[in-house]
Length: 230
Image (cartoon, rainbow, N blue to C red):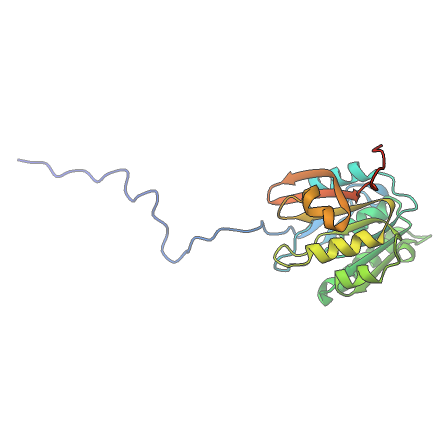
């Protein structure tokens, strides 16, 4: 007499998926509810992050590397964060002594949040508040704001436009015009930008880092023809 076979311990298949739960491939990890400033007078201060689709706060690791490249002390520098979002880059620059930081953001809710952060930082500065004197928020489109800046007026320009937009070329061109002599442009993008791609804007890559899906660059003005590299 044949004994009935035992149920296989390998069933159900490991490839089977629970019913009613479609498989999704995340494009970006969900942003944290808050970010932490990592240097300067506001080091370790936590800032709230608004839950917005596509909002990508620059990770701590990338910000730490960026300000190692730019220099921990930004005293006296003029900066603009043209696609501010959470404002993490601009607030880091101000925390490290930047003389002036302009935060430009087109989303009204994010502009309100940036203003809340300014109030939070101002409270930390009592009895001698300074943040609102050197930090300015502006609702507007990043490229348009860059075009309104005086030529060669900015020491550091932060560019972190939406990954799915077509803003990189116009933003880089406008930023190159506003960049001061020996200034730096920080560019965050889903791909690496090479000197060949940057040539039409008169820029070259000074530093590059890949962190996950993000490529972080520090760009400088291309040397004049015939100039000897330092």
